[in-house]
Image (cartoon, rainbow, N blue to C red; front, side, top):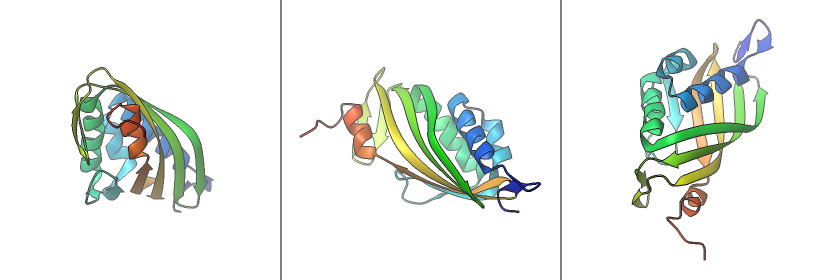
Amino acid sequence: MNGKKNGKRNGKKVVNRYFEALDSGDLDVVSELFSVDCRVFRPELPEPLVGAEAVKLVVAMAHRIYEKFRTTILDSFEDDDAVVVRLRHDAVHRGEWRTRIGTFDLPGRPTSWEAVALFRLHDGKIVEERVFRDELGMLLTAGVVKPA
């Protein structure tokens, strides 16, 4: 049963555990939550990430880029094998931040951004994640781009 266990939905629980692991940097939990052949689509990457090991790299990278990182789930919805989450990340940059428009040195600078993440689950594991975020807002918040 896609996203269900014993007739009860558990997709939100799986997704919430992922964000807890992302915040804490707990790489071991990622293997429990993502399928070995999952696909993750992120706006900063030209190709999807494939596999739980690739997701671990994203979690580790978040803790290399940011000295503080916290996720707040604003809304979440579950239907069959899909979970949609609207969230906010609050972080403090460690130093260099690479974006699609360049690399910026931002040590100690706080930033926050909202995103929507769509998850698809199968047999209690995440098989797909698609991230949509306000990258211009991220650049504005970080002071990299000035408002008109």
